[in-house]
Length: 284
Ligand code: KIV
Image (cartoon, rainbow, N blue to C red; front, side, top):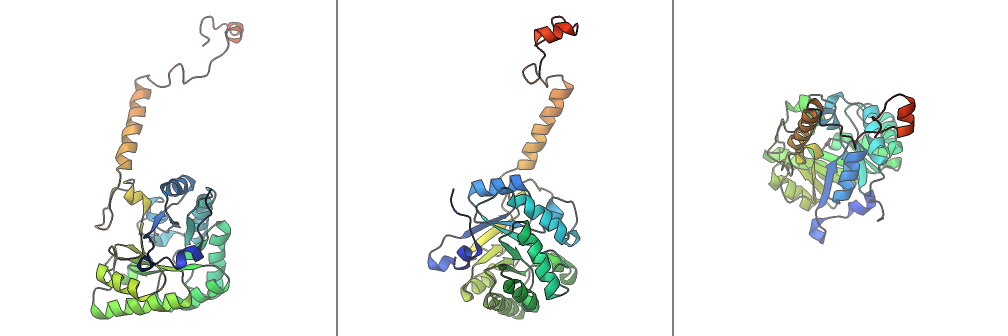
């Protein structure tokens, strides 16, 4: 078995230096982690998107650090080779550096090899505190879903001149502080390319065009398990929900039509025991 991916393995992974783009997907449980691992991804994000794609909430603001630790532990139990990144949810890194470190440690103790948090320069004290406690940090800039109330919805960011420069300055600050990689979400491709060029740690894009050092998608989106919303940046590689509904409907038909279970799918008594129970001729 090849050796697990670590944050230091990722830190220098720039496409401009000849590396292939990094591949990250989300997973929230052990089967999801095994699928991602067998598919050959580099990083697994136990994202706070679990709130929307698994737990049925309308946004990511409803999940807690204990929810994320629970799902991170489930992913880590699969012992995947990709680096497991645990997502710090809203309000787990907004109060104080001390509380932030304790929350990051919950994800690392659950099995994460690194943590991710959203936001730019104003999060530097929290980022520095986590790094100081020896835990690798991934940044997340642009459309940061934990800020949807402040942003007024899921809107593409950094479209105006000054906003693009602000994003650049945030990215430089995060890289300078020691983040080993930065997610760029929902920003124009040209801005993502400019940021990717300007920093020495990899950018991982989602809705940020082709010029990042890697890409991330929510597994349920790319597999077509989640089919209610279809943002422009999602490419569906399968229609798993349709296939699952079809398979389950087939099961429903088989049970109602008495076609399941068959003789071979049932356990049976020996002839001798069947006879002692008076079940003549009914043993398998
Ligand atoms: O929670 C998540 O899935 C994320 C990705 C969309 C980057 O943060």
